[in-house]
Length: 440
Ligand code: IFM
Image: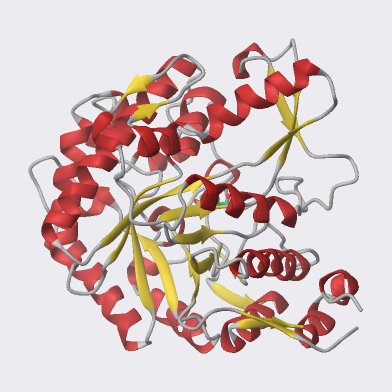
């Protein structure tokens, strides 16, 4: 194997991504907490990583010592605005302290304003199906950005709006646990409108801000040559991926149920946030009307994670970045999430190295990829899957709050510190892919 290093451009952002409900603990005033108490999840978020009581400090230390120069976290709407007519200034002060904590550690913050959770008062009035959400959310965004603007210029308005809408209103695994494509599309339409309003609001408050959203993008291939499988692939691909991108490109939201004009959305992004985990194989399934007769899975030979939640398909990451750059030429791209569930760290080192390698290939075409945020720093609460999936560079025992470093944390630290991936790193942490990543 040749000795070599794949370097990234100077100033590249390397960090991890987290979300309030998954790390803070005791976020009792949102719909997810309620959903957990009703028994819909595999365990309870409880104290999570106990960040609300200050454990973010030691985790930020871990990240900084591991060479990370950026961090993405979300603020919890239900803490900042616990009731429609009440703002919690102490909550905002805690987020300011976290931002100062990042600044003290020379880490660039990226704040997500909505990451799957809604205050109960919003949920009880219909959540994102209620058209009033656009002004509710904009008001919350104004208040929050105004309070935090001293420390942050990078904003993600909404994380994975497609997953929020489809898991809550088609798959039924997220609250409110519904199966109705029409309602899912209404939710996405309101998310687009709220994103557009927030985009303008943030720019009005902070001229130098850079605002985007984080798209969970799923590249897809048809399972066979059959025209029906190809048709299903196209329906599913557009249904899952395209609502936001189409609205932002053209002002028209594309949906399997028809198109909807949302002209104010056009052009409302300064960067595209991409969350990539895996690629799906899609086929026609008469028994699945719930998902418009489409079904997806992974090939039987795929390199899958311990719960088969993710297949390690690094080329899919490259195709994702290629799609992004072709769809929005010259628009900066941030990889806002990428990672794998793996409690034993059997797969993660090669998953990480192979995905960084694909991102390096993309960067070499001068595609404007500006940073990478690994999901995630410390094991945290994985929504309906609870604690059964472990995405952390550090393992967490939620009972004792003890953190234990996984080997991948050292690999990622080496990558961040070098601003690149070397053959030596691969040889040390995942020699099984050395020949494919560094061919002779
Ligand atoms: O934990 C989630 C995150 O909240 C959103 N993107 C996918 C991650 C892994 O499941």
